[in-house]
Length: 406
Ligand code: C5P
Image 1 (tube, protein in one colour):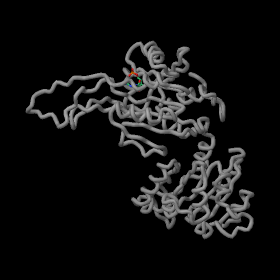
Image 2 (cartoon, protein in one colour):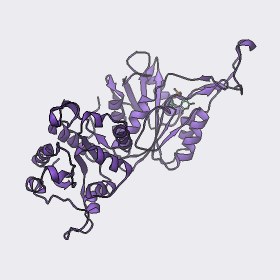
Image 3 (cartoon, helix red, strand yellow):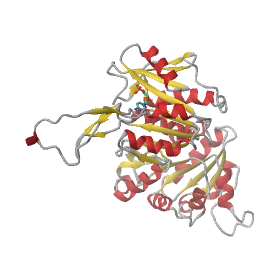
Image 4 (cartoon, helix red, strand yellow):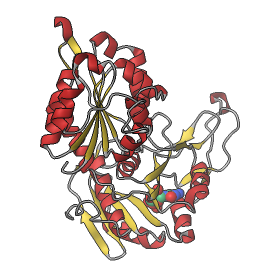
């Protein structure tokens, strides 16, 4: 945290006294803390406490500050992170709705920095659908929520809603500040999920892909600063803090990618695209009384091979799900589809590949294997793949040396 600037927002709740400790821990860790107190917060704690601890004036006003006529934009730009402790129900509602009627909410609208909220409130409020909905909106926009704990609340009550431990809040802030931003400004197009090829009006030919690997890649690229567009077949996933296009068939996925290909720097094709589709899907529903239908299949377009043939500056990453000769078959795919990187995984083991949360992979480029992972989570594998992408874009080592190849 050394030298990083944290705007510490404090709202009016009894847990405001714990924000004092958060402020102390942040300054101890070397951060420059700029405290912003709401009017409610000043009923519980004084600006002087924060000014003294942070060695920075605690700000409370949007207007009438003679030293700073536009404090919110200045604060928003200076922040490497905005941390709100405690985030009250009223504050979450105003932030989710885009209000800018006090210094804290105005600063939050004026910043591009990551935002962390540590809510604290009574259990009934924490569980209220309005609070849940507001936090879901904020999470979908990329705000990190440090969930409150179950424990003693004001007035001697017990339940969920007690502010998370200050050490944990500062830990989360530290992790976010340490996160790599080595894909800042890189336009990344990610596909996820299995395509569904209609047999008739209600049935389709599909596969077991859950979309988890592609979704993990899209999230990880977003966290590292990339401008992400996700093309997924899973309408039930998300919400995601980046544009998402939901498609059904290989043909729809192909169209979605073609539209965006020229404006992409990296395409990661994690989707399990069907290789075959019914040639003439019935318009209505096949009826049982009509007997067993004969479904004639035809090949689908190989989207990745088409992109490979059309590529100019784009870096192309493909996947190869194999059950035997994993490396050799993946290497052949790399050449045939003109890929820059291929992620090969053995889908014959139950703990890797489709549906599960873990994976084990070999990454190859035209020179052969560049990385072989043990069994890792899909989020971890996404990080390993993006390390290789960053290295190929000449961005490795921007903020941190890339992970050792395993
Ligand atoms: O040839 P195979 O299907 O194993 O290749 C896998 C890779 O090619 C994956 O990245 C997948 O998304 C992509 N693919 C495609 N279009 C297809 C089939 C696969 O883009 N019709």
